[in-house]
Image (tube, rainbow, N blue to C red):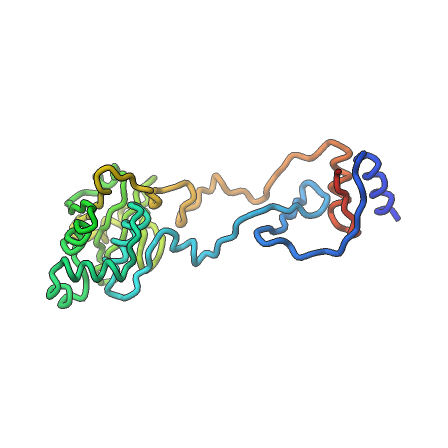
Length: 255
C-alpha cells in the first residue's frame, strides 16, 4: 500500500509522468547494474564496454604462431599497429626467408635483425639497428624490437616505452607485460634495438604508444574503496528514482 501511494505521489509531482508496469527483461548487451548504495533508490544502469582479460592482455600484439617465430611476430606487431601496414606473420616469415639468409635462418630456427631489415626494405620501410644504454631508452619516442635473454632463451619483444621507472613490453608470447628498469637491464641482450620508420611522406597510426590505461601498473591514487556521489536534494527526482528502483515492478516515464 505504501509503495502504491509513493508511486501516485511521484506521478503527481512529475507532472507529465505516467505510470506503466511491465515484466522484467534481460539487461541489454553492453549494460550492467551498478548498485548505488549511497544514493538509495535501488540500481543504476550504466552502459559499459566489457572486454575479456584474455583479449586485453594481447591488445595490439600479434601473437607468435610458433615457438621460434617471436621475431616475425614482434616485427609484424610494429608493422601493423605502429606503422599501419596490413601484413600477417606468415607473410613476414616468407618474406624474411626470401630476402634474408635462408640457410642461417633454417640452422638457427629463427630470424635475425638483419633478416628483418632486408625484408622491411622491400615494403618501403626503413629499419635500423642500434646499440644503446638505458638512458637512451628513456627518450625513445617510438616502439623498438629488442632481444632479451629470458628464462635461458633468446627472445624478441617490442619495447613500447618507459614511464616512471617502468618498462612496458609487448611480448608476442606473454602479452602486455612490464619490468622495472633494473629487471629489464638484466634481461636486455647486448643492448641492441631495432627501429622501424614509416616510408617518406607517410604517417604512423602509433597504436603502440603508451596511454593512461596500461595493464601491469595500478596507480593507487585512482582507486577508492567505494564510489561516491553527492546526495540528490530535489524531491521529485528522489521519488522518481525510488519508483524506478523496480521494487514493485512499476516505472515512471516522463513524456
